[in-house]
Length: 493
Image (cartoon, rainbow, N blue to C red):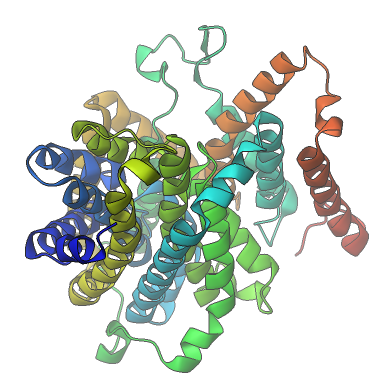
């Protein structure tokens, strides 16, 4: 490998400009609810035909990275996640922005996203082959059990009423069953609406659950309501003491995000929720979660961007895209006649190492662009509701319609919004609904494939080493609350 040629191309003006373009498009698309990562990457894909393979791939990866951070901007400023992965950030990001300092909330997100991205890049550089080999030992039985762990853990998200939180999980799982059964081809719970054949659109669900329900709450407060902050609270930047305070959740999120990324199908939404729950579990100040905890921002935001690096591991090592977004990035390889997989390390060594080191550069560019542009977004929180709500609703409708070009999706999001507004008033857990919805289809498909392999026998879960280990974890998750409180469904007044 010619090191000088590699760094000459990597730091060429054209490559850096394409990375900057990808970062800008990703940041804007991620910040606008309903648009998100996939649209950012797909918009840029045609450009890859006329630029170098390395420039093409780094441009798409920079869009992926920045859109994951960009999703947190609207989550923090408006309480509306720009991407599904930013839904966990809403819980504490929006609360911290409203009650204390929007500038600090955004800064926690940006720093955590940057550190998570760099960590994911280092994992990509040093652990690609070992992690890919480990991932091959896990299959559908383990994926099912991992999802079970997630579902059990999400039932503990609610600090007020565990029973309502578990009911919320059931609602999310039920919503996840809507659509065509992938194994039999039969329609389930679609009410004879062909628009629901692919299930509930994740964009419509996220906007309905978080955006429209929040808008109804804003209307309830009155159109002339506005948040008042002093100029200092609108500025970003963190002190060394504040950074030290979130080092644990950033580390947890970075590790979980990188590991989850290597398992195709789990994705950034699952990794962000897993990281949020882990950050809460290991926090010394659990009671502050959901009320504006910086740890509740740092955990999921570091995981989001670490997952991007992790999802590249199976692509480069095995030729398997780790997420839908990485599948589009894989298209850039194919456009240039390159087949990802084990042979790419020998046949395209310069390109592979260019991606490794370029990934770190895309993260740094994301940070610099974020520092430059996000102060403009922060100012949106002080705009009166009478101006802010119409603009938000217009952007939301554009975002929903652009996802499938169907008016039905807008109606569906409105219906979900009203329903979730009522559920929120009744103190049910909206985050539990969303995470169960994300994990439900993965859990169902993994279980059914597992039972198909074992010819209906559940003994397969007790004969695989990793399955047994996960079963022990599940038993511990159930037993610990019972031993601590005597009753899992005990309600706090």
